[in-house]
Structure formats: C-alpha cells, structure tokens
Image (cartoon, rainbow, N blue to C red):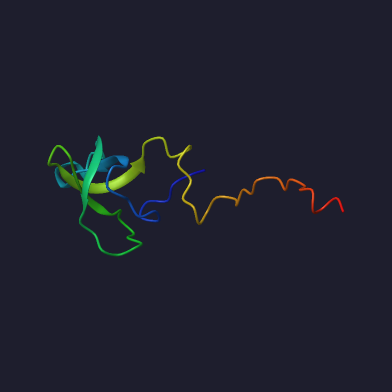
Length: 90
C-alpha cells in the first residue's frame, strides 16, 4: 500500500517522517512521533502540518510502518467465522 501525501489524517502518537520548512529544497525528512496535529483539513495536498514530541514542526510526508497500519475505512472488513449453536442444529 502506498501513501499519497496528504491523503491520510495523522493522529497523536503516529510515527511519521516530516519535512521541515528549512528542508523543503533538499527534501530531507525528520522522523518522530506526532504530539499535535496543526492542520484541520482532512486532506491537504502538501501534507498535514504536525508538531512532533521533540517540538519540531513540519509536514507529514510518510507514515513509518504504514504497511501494517491500514486505516479502518480502507481495510477489508473481517468477520469471525459463524459457529453453529445447538439451536441451529434443530
């Protein structure tokens, strides 16, 4: 699964890679954990602006471990297999 910048709304505690304003030209990414989400929009074309626990502010470019973290609305719905009860056998 690939992440399109700005398509997934970050949550407090997410591990992300951001680009700081000073690094826009070089594209250097800084990794950290989201302390606060500063962008209110659900979608943002340049990436949601966040503050990391280290105090650094930047725009989310990647989610670390995004392969394992599939948002609920995008992932397949998994149901437990149906188990027969005694009433079903009558």
